[in-house]
Image (tube, rainbow, N blue to C red; front, side, top):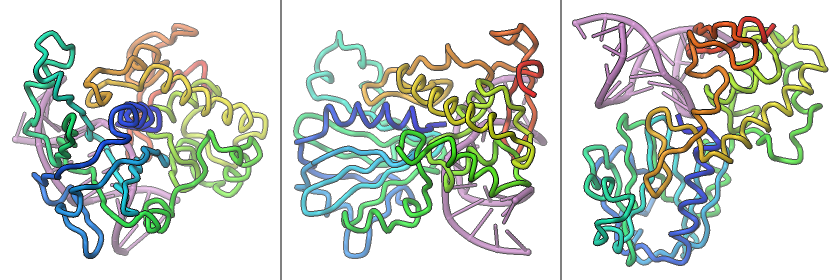
Length: 287
DNA sequence: TGCCCCCTGCAG
DNA sequence: CTGCAGGGGGCA
């Protein structure tokens, strides 16, 4: 579920509370969620100070002292919840219900800080936390494969047009959600971007016109910006580090709206299966 | 390049 | 009880 806007929301939240703090210790509750590089263990976490919290596509990069970094992917059900010690003592605090549940049955990794605790929760165990030397982040297999982000200066309408030309036999949704071509859009924001560009999701690359690609490039940026503005889409698992939900689900035009009238033309939104994913569209607005 | 797998919980 | 949810790895 977490796509670029959700991960960016988490990034901003973590940046606020973690930068400058030092990890006292780390607990690994589920071994397959934690991948330390050669020579490193969970014990290596102790004493590392958080320098910055960055994002690459849908992954988080937490830079630490001693030239080490945490590379984190939430995949579908991952959460990073930070609970301040003061909040734990304050019964009136809004994150109180979360406080009571942490660690939950889905907590896989815990990071202890002086002022609070960071919980990596992941119901379906697809996510991962890697600990590696900072210079190796750029060489990480996952990072290496990432394409250009829509917010990158290099992401021009011509760039999008060129990758569409390179994939004549792929459908347009597969193209824009391929992380090696464009990093950041998953199922939700791909469906949304295609709605705003008025393009039917099954259209093949060779059948997409240049003018449509230009419209799509700006639609992709627009939906991601909107998602960030509303702190992400919280249909299921997405939470900010404070434990609150995002609001973007209220503003979705097609995703999760099967059977409801299109917000533009009132036609009933349809859902099909494409590339093994649920795909939502307006049969009238998109052609 | 498309499909199965990794997992778990929940809707039908 | 079956099928679906879906990011990304790996394979034919």
